[in-house]
Amino acid sequence: MKKEHLKAKLATLPNEPGSYQMKDRHGEIIYVGKAKNLHARVNQYFVGAHDFKTTKLVQNIEDFDFIVTKTEKEALILEINLIKKYRPKYNIMFIDDSSYPYIKLTKEDYPRLLIARDTKKDKKSKYFGPFPDASAAKETQRILQNIYPFRRCTHMKDKVCLYYHMGQCLGPCQYDIPKEVYEEMSAKVTKFLNGDSKEVEKELEEKMYEASEKLEFEKAQAYKQSLDAIARVIDKQMIELDKQGTRDVFAYYADRGYLAIQGFLVRKGVVLNKEFRLQPLYGDPEEEFISFLIQYYENHPFPTELVLPKEVDITTLEEVLDVRLFQPQKGYRQQLITMCIENAKKQLNQKFDVVERQEETTQDAIQTLSDLAGRPMNRVELFDNSHTSGQYTVASCVVYEDGHPSKKDYRLYRLHTGNSDVDSMKEVVYRRYFRLMKEQGVLPDAILVDGGYIQIEAAKEIIDQLGLDIKIMGLVKDDHHNTNALMDETGKVFDIDKNSGLFFLLTRMQDEVHRVAISYHRKLRAKAQTKSILDEIEGIGPKRKKQLLKEFKNLTNIKEASEEELAKVVPQALAKEIYTFFHS
Image (cartoon, rainbow, N blue to C red; front, side):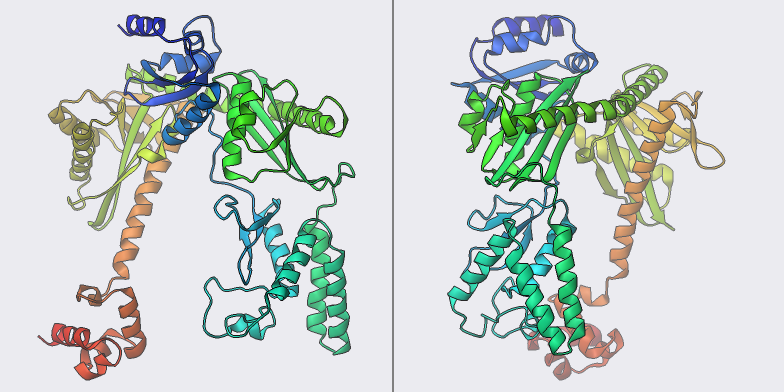
């Protein structure tokens, strides 16, 4: 049925540019791509031989959708937007939460010098970097703030603060400071952060000698340390004497089903940072490389120029990215490209064996688990509960897709069944799958419970009542509380080789579900321990409670206080409410 349906749909695809979205049996989008010709590109997935990874993708395709666009550029932009929206499991995801630190000089009447990672949000400000790590950026910021007293506070106050008295702020909140003073400081800082440190070093030396003459040796030592720090934070690794602004250099290397992307971030001739990505490859290497560049520059500022290999078709990239593109054939830029490609090759060869071995081990473990269960075990859910003498009873549900945690699908539950593990299992299984059925969510292939046959029976009772076809197995532990076997619904036990990939996978799963449950339990318990009877009085929030405890020292004194005494700390109406609460 699946084959005939797909075959008919493939035959009707238009010969136009657009984006296609592959779906699994649950209707979830698992891969997004773009094509100059939708008919030709999508049909390629279903004809001929593929490597292991692409074969796995194709095996999971149950259906697909497509969107026709007018141009290849529109298809590319649409592809990136769909990847960000759906985060498909087989797409190479280059957008992550990490980004390099920059020093930010704000464009305000009274500027501030800040550390920033998001350079897109405030486009009026100036950004300098990137820096290799946060410590280098903070050290540079500290040096500059000690010399140039920029404003420190986020919001202007009425009076000067401690930084003014320390000589590290001019106090524009209270005093009229000419804007020319800040313009001059901004120009000097810009000069320093663009690589010219001579003026800053000269000012530090003058301040150091001045402090020494005044016998202020601690202050002189601090200036000396700042001078030494400048040498540390300014990278002296020069590739070539080249002062023509900023340039990013990117190239890629594809081999054995993986894509390695290497980049050098060159600032004033200095390689400040490198970027490296190694990912499984499901599409065309050049298309994935272009996809990476677009995603990368959504989170990073554009350089003066972007240097790419001459083999890359940059037609659509020129339309999408607002940056000068170079594809050199000789000279300094070509040397940088060669360096990128060679580094990508070396990095891929160095890391490939480890990455491949780990992935193969995980896939072997899933296959072994499927063989033991007698059915596919690609999506597995595990449950665990935690409580303290029947109080704060909670449960966690963690989800694993193809041997990897799917954290967006994790769920936490506050239970109402006391400290009975069997009742807790029944409650959480019922709540989990009744809701999935109601919302038509994705059901798992199997449930793994952390316990023996009693727990399996409890889960099976609920699954049978709901009329679901979900395999249930239990993690059996030895005397040392370590998983050493699996048990199925009939009570049959399957021993697990402790050197096998399945043993390590199940151990990781068990540790994860236990960690999530314990963390949630501790959070609730800590929250309950900080709760006060004052929280039961309407009108008292964290701020009021803090004021009352600060004034009266403890709850007993609050109880014994008169309405008039309470009214000195809180409004009259609330004072009356508190007094009535304790004396009614």
